[in-house]
Structures are given as C-alpha cells and as structure tokens.
Image 1 (spheres, helix red, strand yellow):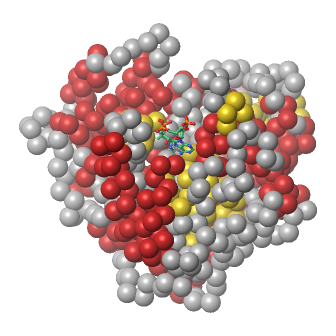
Image 2: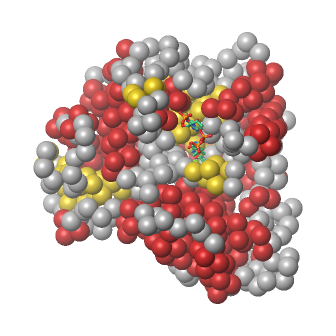
Image 3: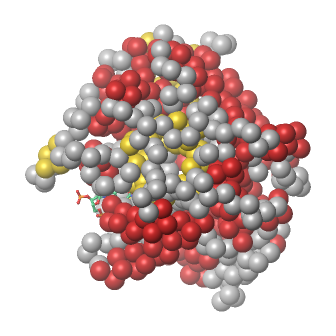
Length: 547
Ligand SMILES: CC(=O)SCCNC(=O)CCNC(=O)[C@H](O)C(C)(C)COP(=O)(O)OP(=O)(O)OC[C@H]1O[C@@H](n2cnc3c(N)ncnc32)[C@H](O)[C@@H]1OP(=O)(O)O
Ligand SMILES: O=CC(=O)O
Ligand SMILES: [Mg+2]
C-alpha cells in the first residue's frame, strides 16, 4: 500500500514496514474507522472534561467522593462480571513491551498472565505500534518463533500466560493514521482506538478459540465517564464482530488520583466487562504530583525514592482498592516494584529480590489477588509470596476488608511526608528523565537505569518533581535553592558526563527535559510534545489538523 491510501475514512500517513499490510487490511482499517465515527467525538468530550477538572483543582477545588453517585457506592447488590476464561488465577503477571524477543520471553516466563504493553513500556514509533500488533497476531496463532541475529533460537513452549493488551491512553494520538471527522477534516487517530481496534479485529475470535478471550488493561482513566466510554466501545465491538456481549474483560488501572475517588463507579460502568482493578503506583504518584504541584509547600513531595508504598496516602489508596474490588467480585491486582535483577551482578539481583519479596508479601497480605513483575527472574519470588497466602486457591476474592475506612482526606493527605529534597535527588531526577527520554526517542520504552526499571510513568515522576521543586522554590538539605538555572547546571553536568555516540538522541532528549520540566507551562504528559515534535516526522503536517 502506498502512503496516504484511503480506506473508508482512515488514511495511512506512513510507509509500510514488512508485513504491515497483514495488520492494516482494508477491513481492519474500516473497523477502526467505525470506532472513530462512533467514539472519537466522545473521546474529545472526555479530554475536555479532564481540562475542566484540572482547571477547577488549580483554582482550589478539593476532590471528594461524588455525591451524585452515592447510590452506586451504597448499593451492596451489584457485582462485576469477574474473571473470564484464563483469568481466574492471576497471581503473577509479567509486563513488557511487544517486540518479538520480549513477546517470546514473556510467553515462556511461567507467569499466569502477560500484560502486552503499548502504553508505559512502549515508545510509540510506527514500527513499534504495528510491529507489536504483528507479534501479538503471531503469538496468538502459535507462530511467533524466530532466530535472533545472534543465532539464538526463540521457541514458545506449551504453557503460555493469558495475554492482556494494554492500549495507549486517551490522551495520545496516532499520527500515522488519520480519520475524517464530521466536518470533513482529517485528524490524527486516537491511539487507544487504534491499538484496541486492530488487536480486537484481528484476534478476538482466535483468542476465544484458544479458550481465553480479548482482554484489556485500561490505562490512565481519570473518572467513571471514561469507563463508560470504554464499556460502550466494548459492546459496539462485540456486536460488530458477532461476539457475545460480555466476552471482553477489562482490568482498569487506578493510577490517577481522581479515579481513586471513583473506583466503585468505574467498576459499575464496566460491570458487564470488568475483571478487576490494578494499583498502578507509578502513574498514581505522578498524578498526585501533577494534580497538586501548585498547591504550596504542604504538597511538596520529597526525593523520589522516599515516596514508597507504605507512606500513608499510598496505603490509603491500595487499601481502598482491595476493599472496593472484593466487595464487587473484582480482582485486585498489585503493582510494579521498580527493582530489577541484573544477571551480571549478583549483589544487585539479591537486593532486587529482597525488595520485590517485601513488596509482594505486603500486597498478598493486604488481600491483593495477584501482582506484576517487570522481569522474568522476579516471577519465582513474587509467586512464593502469593503462594504463601493463596495456597491452592486461585485468588482471595472472599477476603472482604470491613475494617478499612478510607476517607477523602486520607487519599490526599501528605502531612506525614517530610518534603526532604537532596542534591542527589535533583541529580537523579535529571539523569533519569534525560536517559529515559533518550531511550524512548530511540524506540525503547522501558529501560534499566541505575538498576531500576524506568518507563514513561516513572520518568513522568522525575520531570514533574523537578518542575514542582523549581516552582515551589525548594531548598535542598545541602542548602541549594532549586531554580531553573540550578537545574540547567545539573543538566549540563549530566550531559557532559555521558558516553555519547553519533546515533544517540541526547540533544533532543535535553530539549525535551527543558520543555517538560523547566518551563512555566506544565505539559500534562511528557509523551505528548515528545511524540509530536521528536518521535514522528513522517506525517505531512498539512494533512493533519492539530489534535
Ligand atoms: C509503571 C508501569 O507501567 S510498569 C509496566 C511497564 N513496564 C514494563 O513492562 C517494564 C518491563 N521490563 C522490561 O522492559 C525489562 O525488564 C527491562 C528493560 C527493565 C530490562 O530489560 P533487559 O535490560 O533486557 O534485562 P536483562 O538483560 O536482564 O534481560 C534478560 C532476559 O530477560 C528478558 N526480559 C527482561 N524483561 C522481560 C520482560 N518484562 N518480558 C519478557 N522478557 C523479559 C530479556 O529479553 C532477556 O532475554 P534474552 O536472554 O533472550 O536476551
Ligand atoms: O502502569 C502502571 C503504573 O504504575 O503506572
Ligand atoms: Mg501507568
């Protein structure tokens, strides 16, 4: 297919790579076009709501449990659909990007489920987006085996995890595909509808035939109306393909502070399609910083490594999540410890295993039904902690938590967090943001940096902390006043210390760090300007109106 080919109302604005035609078929693009016809306008409304909510909070509105939906919270009768086939036992799920090697390794990992990630762990180059769809297409049909350039054989074994796709969030666009809006303008497609639509169209029936189903993690939702939008998309898609209503299962990431106030409502909106909620801790921390970044000194967060899962506002969030899920028959899935092993460094590995064991022991003890790991070498450790609590049972849904009483104030209570910021904390945030963004620009969306897993969510924390510290005029424990100029100095220093190569993207990454951490304006997501200005260069701008 040549560039700019039209299929119904979708235009393709990129050259095709190898086998892209198998994914971008006229029928699949027509389905994605139908999704846009039906839902692109509603997506835009939800994005407008986000903007209004942000403005209201900036103007001092306090978050609260919604009075208008109290009947949903207080009604003890309703339950969600719960696990679909292959989702009953989710004690350890591995997450990761969808490149071919990671796909095979995740399928062979021994985890119960694989979160195939087009969100936080994927840099959305066109190659990654469609290449990931090809790998998933092949994986689902048992034809993903390959031999690497180094000659290593990658063959998938007999037992594979249940696949759960995480499409990109509502905020992102896919500029390589355009859709014609009602006024006849060509606009960049919604990344969520593209990722969901292509995967569902090609694979839903094959997944069902495999004894599992089309399953999704829904990222970065901010309220229950966004959940309603997803539920309507699911019903529309099931009807379009002649699949029984309620076949799709979604697990919603509670990873924004506003969503934490609407967990019951989110489950309720998706009740015919919902399997559970997940505590997406890294974006949650980012959301807290972003939401309250301008509220003054009592909302200043300390060095990133001090914001742990045991600080009171994080405890309040996870306790409420488990309680809410189990009341409704939904799985509560734990999050990602960022400590990763290093096969070449036993000390690093030992430390990571100990940290992960602590984290998973706490989650299992709190009532979570399963958890995430970032790396195959962490599976046994995580599984041991969940086995110790679950035994032979597939989950602990029966464990209600009547003793939990989380108030609105506790969800946003930062009073016990001492705003201790150090020079090392500043430097670490600069270094992580710079190195992660550079990796992302080269198409690598998850990276091991200083023995921690870094992805889009953790990088957001680093850059938003810098922004907040500058704007709140924080002085470090060592006495350095954090200003734009002082962070610029650290940035120069980190740049000077890098091992550079001709092919690296550090100059662009440095510009992005400035844009997202050092300006007065605070971009809502770093990936929005980074994508539009640095990752995508093949789109004829005149054909696509601004998102
Ligand atoms: C905030 C959130 O959203 S968390 C969820 C999103 N983040 C993620 O999913 C991160 C997933 N993890 C990863 O991407 C990787 O583990 C990284 C980037 C952190 C480290 O990767 P590497 O540097 O390749 O680790 P390492 O060299 O130890 O890998 C050893 C082997 O394990 C494989 N591996 C590592 N992590 C994974 C994974 N998550 N899934 C599948 N295979 C994996 C590697 O491919 C490698 O395979 P090979 O021996 O065939 O070459
Ligand atoms: O998506 C998970 C998170 O922690 O963010
Ligand atoms: Mg996230």
